Image 1 (tube, helix red, strand yellow):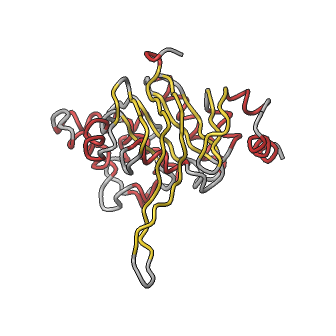
Image 2: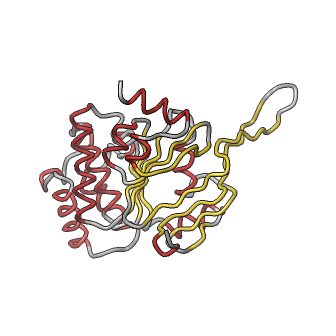
Image 3: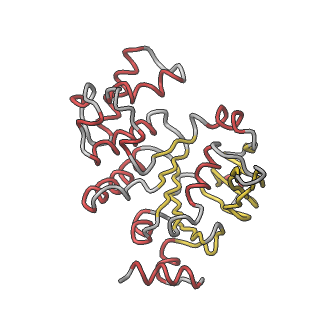
Length: 262
């Protein structure tokens, strides 16, 4: 894979959290989470990151999004992402967006769906008021809803409808890269399947890459082109979706596959 085919590359990325520990003397203690992460994700690729809860998947997502600092190097679309968080956010805010596990928690219950969809456009000064309204209506239709949802509030929607709104809000800026962090784990199986199919439909309509984070290997195998397996903050195996699912090499990957096929 040539460098020009990559949208995101990570080299020896490490990060963790600093906690205050209280006792006779208060002191800070650093808790490492990620250890020497090396990944390359291609343009227009759906890339899966799978592993058990607590292994560091969401921490990696936060590092890419510029929410927490990291060491090592990251390059996005040929540009190096700096560890200085504010600088990173300004650089990548329009290009990298995210969809999270809890759609209700991600939405402001005081705002209408129309206001939520138009907010990213307002923040980045895109379009007139009329144009922003039209873009929001068009995005609702793209994610399988319609203009009648513009004046509704999140509490009036089902979990699947809320997640569709979150996906629409993340894609309305036409980002190059989307991070979906356990985006269907809070939904029931049938609704989750609909959201997976929606991701595939959107992929056909828009050109974007996605890092799809999940603990469910079956889901990752269905949706993604390539997969990385994370265990205890380290990448233990990377391969095509079929290679990981049908011919796992690492012992931990074999355990995941066995559990998925039960």
